[in-house]
Image 1 (cartoon, rainbow, N blue to C red):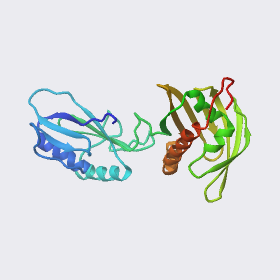
Image 2: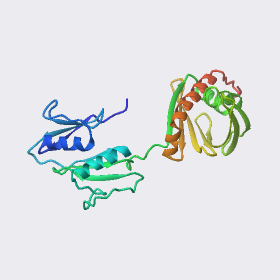
Image 3: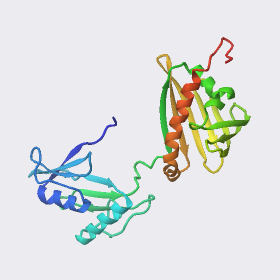
Image 4: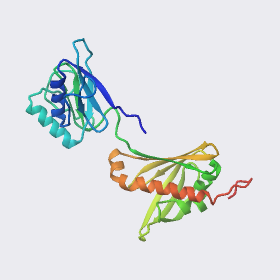
Length: 276
């Protein structure tokens, strides 16, 4: 499983007031007591902020929450209703302005104890993804998997989602070579496709640029894994918005493509001269 932050401790002079204030602003649950001397704020299903009273000096912490557009409006409304000053930059005067410099909206405000809260709709630290990443381990050496990709006899039998067939018109499998084909859907619809082979490293890597309205770059990487081959399939779109728009189709289609590739590799044989 991916590494996730589970909880962190927030020192304060008045844990009940601080925990309640933040929970009320964010619109999330909290509790006066929990395990140990904490008043927890349950930010989401995985993250808890544990407020603790202390008389000792403590550093000022900065916490940033990424929220949706509707949540941003709701939380900002609560901040304004509570009369809490906010600003558009991490430092500077409380100008009561919203920062829109990074493709979304963000504000900053301070806890009476000095801690700083930030709320944003688009992360500037980690831009939204433009790619789909899939991996598959195929029970065959790299040469055989590469043959299934680079030989049009094999490629035409597996390229496309489940139920699709293809007709190749041009297939120039070299750096800069053109690839024109028609994909035929199960309902009989034909989808013309035009691509360029940007980079070909035999038995290691193939980079394909798909031209046209759904522009993307597909990077297929082959790596040894014991006596098998790990296939990494990375499809990169021009914008995060385009990725999001197509996610419901592309995610499953890519998995089906890899299913069909794995099945076709079983039909590939390599003789000493490299012919299939």
